[in-house]
Length: 389
Image (cartoon, rainbow, N blue to C red; front, side, top):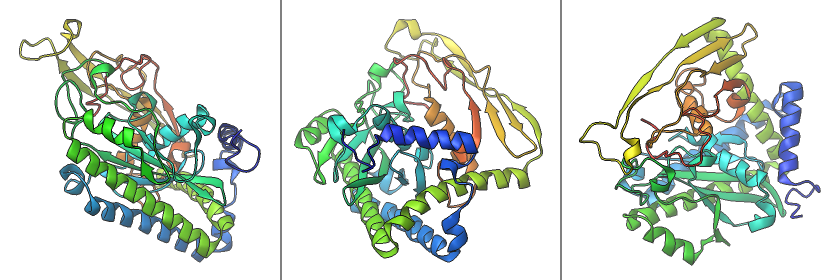
């Protein structure tokens, strides 16, 4: 056993224990009291400001180092700091939907024992864009870098960019000609693509040969790696200044604070009850001018997205999407993680318009997404390239 946590437990065991304590107490990792924040509120806020400010700074700096026009001019990138088991601690500005998606990739590695094979080591680099484990669409390429302190895994930093092309059936980042995953383009599942802070040569050659725009691909790759390394160095500086114990306490407490923050906003801004809404979008594939790869997909369909929001008197809430239509033969399907993460984009403008954006809000929300629907497919063949349809 790799023993990355230096306590004899696997990452999966550690994650299962956190989830069990959270479920039992109703507080993230059982934190009924925010001891660090209550004991030293100024120190707590200083640490938050240093980390959050440094993460935003890394984003703004990295996109100037090397980036495609989509990243440099449109700002299609985001960096997020995670704890060792993949729960989001702090995130930068940018495409905030990836608070959850990069975390799902880390959790996939945790659940599938990546620590033993292929191994998780200091200065490793992992890459992911697999929509079946939480990504929005294949053009969102993630770089994930573990953070070690005294040979112990204490967290991860993730960076994601929206690339220009993925080598799918039709050109561009959000293509629509394919009707299955197998036409969505280059797919990477939490692959170790570097060690000792350097990308593997086979990865560099293979990835650039798999897309139509290799020059922009490698620029975005450098952007993500540079930003991740800047944030990793930032964490080391904070630990050196404030101590590892304070840092480890902070990353748990700020998630619990995020959970409490959402509940507080629900109390102050909403009225208990049930709220219902429906939305529809057409998929006019039967039209003679619409070209698709498979004849069986030449159908006119309508995607249905109903929602019932239940707000309880104790400020807990549930988002129920019962009645949504099934997944379809198109590239507009969505993984459940990217769907729930997409809701954070709305929430950052309404219920949590603060800089404390992390997985705390997720632990304060109950979702119901039926298996087999377009936002929670039960078939690995589904296409996701244009999930924002």
